[in-house]
Amino acid sequence: MTAISERPREYDPIDISSQVFWSTTAPERERTFAILREQRPISWHPTPESGLADQPDDPGFWAVMQHADIVEVSRRNDVFVSGKGVMFGNVPEELLEMSQSFIAMDPPRHTIIRKLVSAAFTPRHVARIEDQIAANARVIVAELAELLAAGGDVDFVSHCASKLPMQTLAQMMGIPESDWDAVVTHANTLVSVADPVFLGDRDPVAVLLDALFALHQEALELAGRRRVEPRDDLMTSLVQAEVDGARLTDAEIAAFFVLLSVAGNDTTRQTTSHAMRALTVFPEQKEWLLADFDGRIGSAVEEFVRWATPVMTFRRTAVAPFTLHGQEIAAGDKVVMFYASGNWDTDVFDHPEQFNLARKPNPHVAFGGGGAHYCLGSNVAKVQLRCLFRELLHQLPTLRVGEPEYVVGAFIHAIRRMPCEF
Image (cartoon, rainbow, N blue to C red; front, side):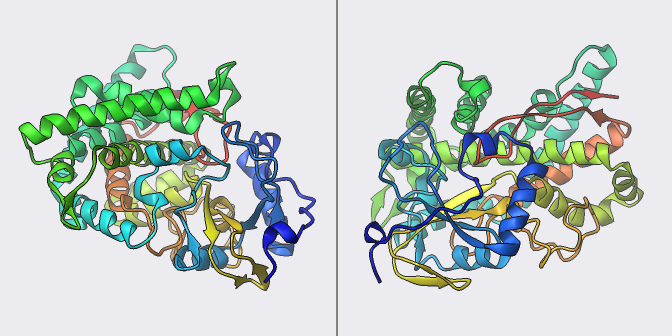
């Protein structure tokens, strides 16, 4: 098969690469995705401008829009690899090494590192920490209730949605409480740098590097303490573990800490915010859930995650020729999975535009489409959502949230702030 550099292609006439496109609303983007799903489920597009490592000679990427194709790419990690980067836009190599840990690795290294850290995320271990998560959720919602009772403007994101995932992450990892807010701030920076409101006139690479260095410093200081004073936490497991007879390096530990700070914090936070907004817009769904919370929260959480789709895109790179949905993919081609499109695929979901907490089955791809890179923290995320919404719907059953203010970007479906009232 001809190399991509010798085979120029015409770009699809529909724009899904520009900052303008990703500045539109999710329903507006979905109208575009629906056209591509129906007419050109595998389409060729110019590489988006990231402002980080723009490459004028980069030929572009294949957009994968249908649910079945996303699952196929996810499970064929022998053909579609992660080691050449997983972000939609290009990112400097040094930033990849500092931030993406094993999600940007391939077997056998990925298999070894994932197995090493997976013990902290098994259903048995998550069950051990569920009581603590539930207690934290109870306190967070009680504090939110006090703020609402006092009157004034209350932001649901900062006073509720962002708190539980950070506390869970901190307690699993062993982060001192005095450092929680700083870790959240730096983690949010990593997923907000494409947003012009957040970035202002700052240099995006400098902003990212500052946040990464701060998170690395936090990780290295914590690792140093755990080598001297081990505890029953994930950082102790990391510093004590051996891989192929060798300890993890400081750089590997720090990169995993960065990954967990983002993946363990921002995705659950965004799902909480989007779900609370949906329960406000569709009050009949809240009433249905409240009628039998314990019996219905399982399917409700799956719909929360599908509806929010907190991670909207992930990239792979083909290392061998492959035919996907009739389209020939060449070795070296970039392939981007659009989870936000796959979760609205009408071939899989009946009326996906409806927020339906009773939806079964619900084979969403919000945690990935399966395969080696399926979200390691999905069990923790579901426990957090169950615990937090139990408290929200019982302590504050008439809580309502207002119009969200969104963060611009193609990676995380992020809400910056959202007012609430009781």
